[in-house]
Image (cartoon, rainbow, N blue to C red; front, top):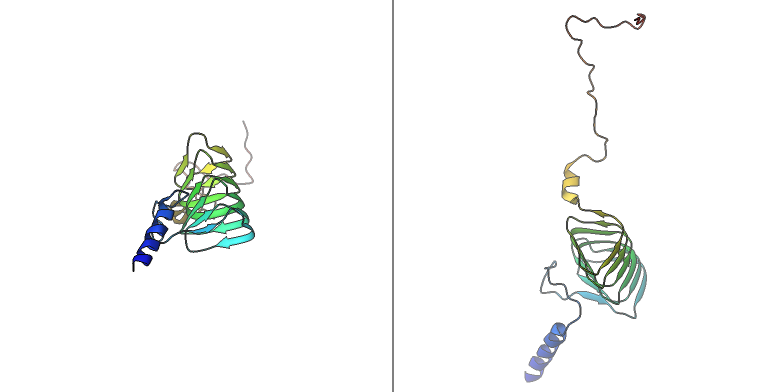
Length: 173
């Protein structure tokens, strides 16, 4: 029993000893985030239903939908990213789409567009691209697929006292 208690305390000490962590609540705050180590390189699509910490390299797409992504100081991502919260301590080239928030830390470097309702660029961070802070929920409610109707669909009524011009009538001065 003492042995398992010591192992549990050792695991807790390692978790608290530093390194990136995801604290702003994930899908399940008691779950530990998955991680991609510094020696790992992935070419292709990364999808999942848990939080992810990237200290390695990803080229392709990252789709975590309702989960969080942390790009560690050693992490490099050349991909379009979709997640709930995205925190960049390392380097990202590509589009970042977060349903809740994007945070670029002082060691972070982002080259690409950000689309999120909340964006934090901390002092010292590097960013090149555009930011769209319109929330996706408001876009779902509106009809963005159709251009706005600028003119009424019915013809204008003729004012009393004015006759409708015939196409054969000529206007003269």
